[in-house]
Image 1 (tube, rainbow, N blue to C red):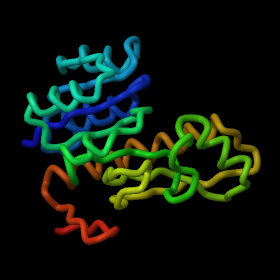
Image 2: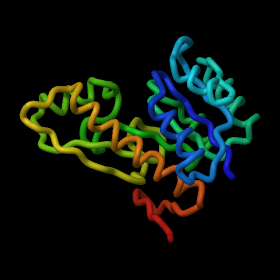
Image 3: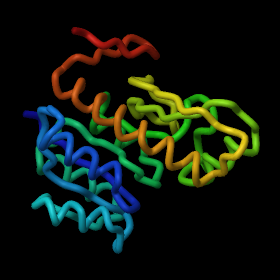
Image 4: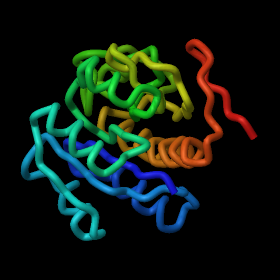
Length: 197
């Protein structure tokens, strides 16, 4: 069983999906701590309801120390709306994954978060969008891609309806990626991530 730390900023629907995955979905990992950079986020309540340590912390050095104190093997950024520093990346090199609500390299990078991503999708007029799980490196939404999945963008969609569709695939591929990581089935070669059976 690997130790998992989850970083959040919002309501924590992806966090809930991970919690459910560790309980019922075959993820061989144990969520040791949930850390939020926002004090009153519902994600912290979700953690407490599931007997997981919930911490509000904005100082990155302290966040790194908390994760190290819990001997975390995998850091999951699940709607964490803060760019992490190169020092953070180096502390957990190839052990940080992020979920992003678009098909990277489209609609990603600094400034693309939350509903802004889905509005950009609508404004651009793309016919498909989706979600991406990737390893985290020093640049925003740039690391090697683990998994992607798509949804159709229909003529009557708006940012909210696209967000709802994308969230469903986010939950699925985030849990699949965490499961593969915990089973030591992911290997990185350059920009490519291979799934080893």
